[in-house]
Length: 497
Picture 1 (cartoon, rainbow, N blue to C red):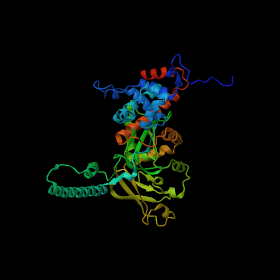
Picture 2: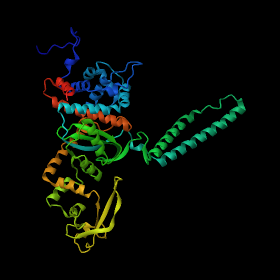
Picture 3: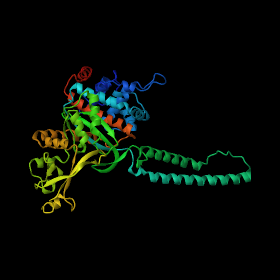
Picture 4: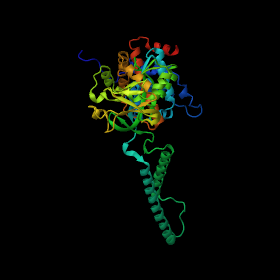
């Protein structure tokens, strides 16, 4: 026989079982079993007994998570997959919610998705996928579902309100003259409260602009996006983009995301404590070691780690420069940075790399405001022997002699740098590059999540929890791969501490 028998019209004596068509260990099965294992009371409790029965939250969550796992973020495309994709049939039980239902589910339960994410994290810990020993924190910028062309200043809004008001006044005046002429010709037979057709849209636009202006004044915003009011213009690797700052704390051994958040601040300094407190809430404990990049280096973060007794490794500059400093191979343009000046405690002065003294200026400390807005006390030290130094042009920023500031948290800063200079600290810190960077690379490149589908801080935060859940579910799949009874292991792993 040349070909295998082929007959599309063949009748099935016993209908095929969808269960048999889904490969063992597929991410579809991992999502199915994981959602069945975790507690979804936070979402289920929002539904009432009255009215038409709703689609089950477990089913809705499964199809959304599977869609995100396959890089499908449009609710319309999800609805199309429900019509023809056997994997969706398996998860939905052949139910087919329309795109509006899917979109509303994501939006209405955005706050509860944080609790669901935490349930998945606990599942990872109980299965042994992740451990709470060494963690790394990092942030990435993800584009908002809004256009930079829609950025508006308060002056622009006030000008548009005036334009709309003037247009409305002109139309009303024209309508008044027309009414007077018609009354004169035909008599009074029109309603006085009738609104001209051409006035309806301008009034709506003016009302919307006034609401945006009130929001800017209430929240003290200088600029706002007309489409997504919460999105901010942030600096990223691709230049400035309109988006959100997405944070993740991950286990250094498994790359499982243990805590996540979305904020509207472009810098990372204020995110360390918030995320560590979330981590403690989810895991019930704190890590032994924390790794972070220079964006988190600041006095209040170092003080927080000390109070929590967490061994932190956070550089204040390039780790390459720190390594050259430890090997005494710094080039001249780096030799005269503040970090290379030695502080002599008993004499209360600094010694520069050329052995010149910088003595204290004044007898009282000053209040200094950092770029982050935090205030600190500082003392200034100045050299009086720079004019004859051959490195003056490199060391001094102006014609005046070199001066540096010593902050009240200088000891914590120096202690942190000394850790990174050590061989042990340098080797441990290298784990950060193997943790944070691959996580965001997976989310953006492999899963294709480069832009939010929803708008507003609350909804985008919920959507970020969805994609971080998918990332963790893939880690569970990898961990259980090869386990014949992986489904049973997953259930038992969650039920037992």
